[in-house]
Amino acid sequence: MKRIGKKKSGDISPDLTSFSDIANLLIIFFILTTTLARPFGRQTDMPSSSKPETQEQQKNDTPTVNLLSDRITYAIGEGKEDEVTMDQLRAILWKSNFPQKDVKHRTVVMQTADDVQYERYYQVATAIAAAGGVIAIITEDEEKK
Amino acid sequence: MAIRRKKKPDLVLPLSSMGDIAFLLIIFFMLASNFMKTGNVKLEKPGSPDVEQQEAAKISVMLDENGDCWYEGAIVPTREVTDNLKPLVEKNHDTAVHVSIHKTLTRKEYMPVIEAISEAGAKMILTGEKEN
Image 1 (cartoon, rainbow over the protein chains, first blue to last red):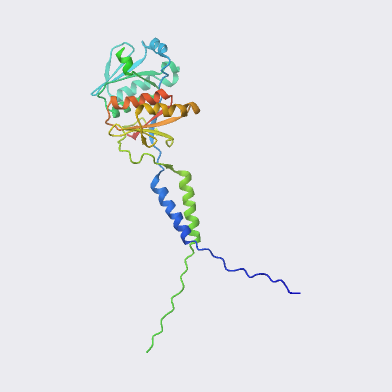
Image 2 (cartoon, rainbow over the protein chains, first blue to last red):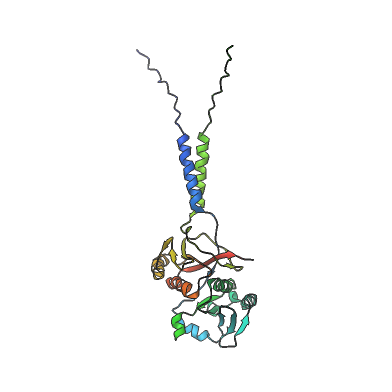
């Protein structure tokens, strides 16, 4: 009987050069199209627009920040408006101790003049949010009333 | 007189490990990166000391220096921002939107965008630069 011999295995060595080329192209693609940086920012809480009565009730003790192109004024309810600097506003907001208060009493009304640039609005909005306040914006419809 | 040339040694670089390293790098980038959908938007972010580092943006709304509104990398009319966001907020109430606005735009340009996002009920993260 003829002996069945083992087949001699051939020397298999696939060419991997192109494989690494493709991998390198993919790396270049990912490096160019991705960003690993996490952005800086501040989450701003806005009150629900479906509760106008509650806001009306609070009107007397709600702080109001009036943002004009050249100055900032601060008032509580219908009280006297005081001109404040950005640092003074921050100090007042931190003194208000919003995180200890009920959600309904955290509202800060922000009135903004038409010519106010976003950078100014951003600084005030982030200061209110950092102090734990909820920003209420007066929309154009409300202003007309 | 015949000069005998030295036989050059047969150089064979083992490239299989190169491919392995390359694929490990690809896996790293795929897991750790998020695509820049708005890399071509021209805008200067405002600065504030009251900001902190946030998670990477899942949904982004941008207002560039010309006042064009970009939603997820495409220019859209401002009123469409609310329509696009509402179904996402209905699915997930914690949907956070990263809002980036050019620092010199005025109220009439940026307020409609802020109102549109607020109307959709999404959480708004105003992004900017950290100032000391």
